[in-house]
Length: 446
Image (cartoon, rainbow, N blue to C red; front, side):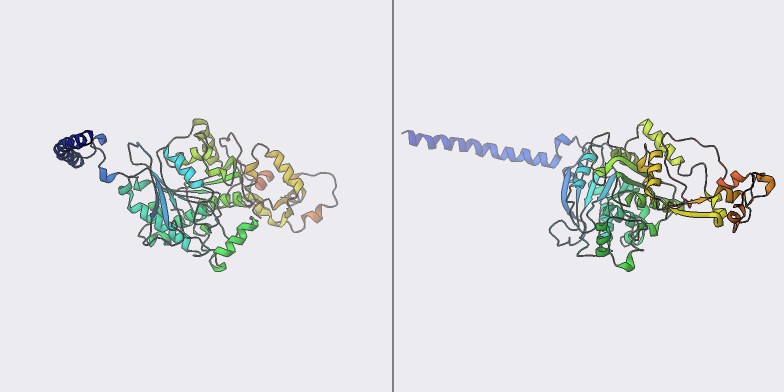
């Protein structure tokens, strides 16, 4: 009897469900038609994008190297009241790795999302299969894809920043300076709001030593005939987007020198929005990991993208640094006396002396090649001047020999002003930059 009674109760429940089911379906259909009531009418369900989307193809079809070649990962911030800026990041890897093996990009993107910045991480075909200019072409294609879909994903199309680290910094700078890459997609470099280049190489025919591994990879990736055209410094222009150029306090050989020379080349072309800084306390990889809210690189990036202001003391120090790009003196008058100039190699003793003088700012000193220095013998210089300006001293049998071949007297007023140039008053920075003027021929360039 008990076994028969159970089916009867089930049939009674079925009758209840047959009545309730149509009502439930009608309620669900009404909710779907009216949208998500939790959105308060602000966001349609069709416009929703997850905070992180992986492997978005930016070419058709996407590459065949694994599943990530020629794709990008998009990180979107949550809860922003206005459209966020977009940072397009190109990872390191000597141009030969399609993937960010050190996971620097995901760490950077996760950190910047909390500051209200959208981040796209680009994967590109490795140069061992597609040599130059393929990697730069892939970067340009990704930038074009993201520019066209700004409204779709909700970031600000007018605030797209192109950034890269190491080999990625080379690609970012090249795409932003050589208009041919973006022109294939009917875009111009001025479509970018700015460029952030971190620990990059900008001259593939460097005048100073770089790491042996870097030189070997350059030969693998680039044809010798293309080294000049593939070097961002070749395309330096005054109308380029704003540049933030960073290098680490403990950098790979030659990269701090490359950063300073690249910034100088941009300024020499009339570019007025170039910031070049050494991040003290960082090395080649840690500089872009953005540890914590107080991380210096993080603050510099957010200020450059106009997301957050710098702390007052840091802002004042950077302003002083900008003023000292052109210090209150020049060595150009020195070079009016070329026949008197003698060149000497910089040995370790000389470096140690400079190191003592720069003991609080050693990272500034090593932005210079420190190959040789130039000097003029003071007495040889004085021997070129009229006696009435110099006066008479004790007999010196070597004066005539030192004066041989001396240059004709240069126009000016006092001997010291003619040799060292005029000093103009200027605000002194709280930390010395240690850099000479871009147009100086100080000898450290050698």
